[in-house]
Length: 161
Image (tube, rainbow, N blue to C red; front, top):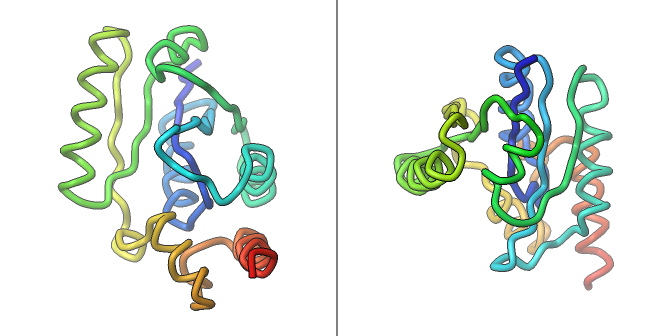
């Protein structure tokens, strides 16, 4: 069984993330969507809220599982018998950063491959940070996130006001 791992903070889940999830299902039998904890980020949503948003928005996609992990992605991947890591790329800047991580992961787990999927044109400008910035000022994020995620984001910013 080919198990793919799509790691990220998913804070919040965007249409770009959903596109990568759907396209990843073609190349793996099972996909783990792995929410990592990043000490450098101050999340808008808790881990449990992100799990719930992803599960709700992906409820029609078969053979996916939302998991969380701490520590090194390569070590987690070895323990879970991951076949490959999937990363979405929006730009050459993303590639430079992700390539360095892929090489480091391969040093830790030599059999672990990273597959890069380029964002589709309609999603390349979307990032979780941009979504949060626009939403924090009451801007329209309808084209950037799934409807359910949009409702949760708007509610979160309404509560912060």
